[in-house]
Image (cartoon, rainbow, N blue to C red; front, top):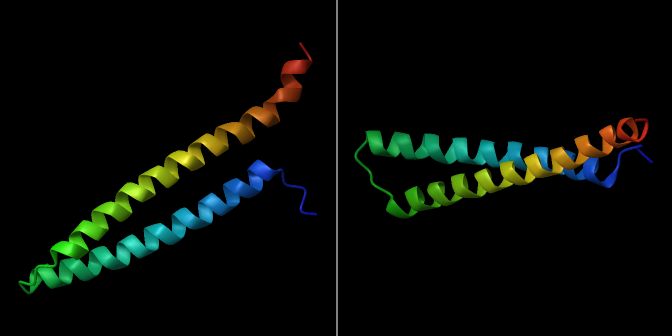
Length: 82
């Protein structure tokens, strides 16, 4: 076993998914910028980009919640000492 709690593993997965989403968003954003520069308008792709950014925000919030859970579990033994 890797010694990680379920929450720590979930945090690793969340980090990986966020990184992958950021890469996909950057690729699409770059492509759309190039197309806009040549006068091409892609409203559906723009809508997709907005949705992807919204989903990324949700993923980041999920990661924050999991991170808080991991941190609270690591502090728990310290709280028992007092």
